[in-house]
Length: 244
Image (cartoon, rainbow, N blue to C red; front, top):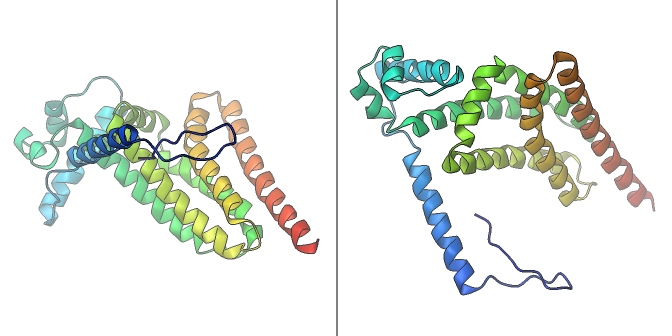
């Protein structure tokens, strides 16, 4: 959690008061507790157990993705596992949704790491950003199931916080790489751009599914153009500062 600071009229930063600090500590403790509750109860190690968990998550993705209220019993029935086996791995639906989001995050991270290895020049960044946005659309797959699962995650305060942490992890990967290949660009400007790009990519991609096809494609083109323009502006500004 971020500490809340008070700013004076001349924008100097003051330390948080003891009361504010205690509130932040309590909030952080609740957040950690919530994260623990959202974790699976058991980690499958044997092939049979992993197959059972895969079946459970496949059923959860299908039923939650269809929208509407879904019970743990319905998920167990669809996965063809006893309800007791379901609860052995997942204490509640929050843990199930979290597991689905973790799998999406892991796939995105793998794609991101593989793509970043190919980015060796600052000039490669716009093409990389466009390719990753296209990959994000592919990962979302069938739009409606993903949108419903994502909506289920956003309905939980714990999962919202974990979603932000996942996004910041991806942001850090991109930022670190870009700072390495473009040391002539101000590091904070690179970070600003990466935070914006990663944070906005998901919402724009999801909204593009909800719009008429032509308008959805128009949104994606505009986002790609915006990121390209921002990178080109950073590079041009750095070159001017270097030659001055």
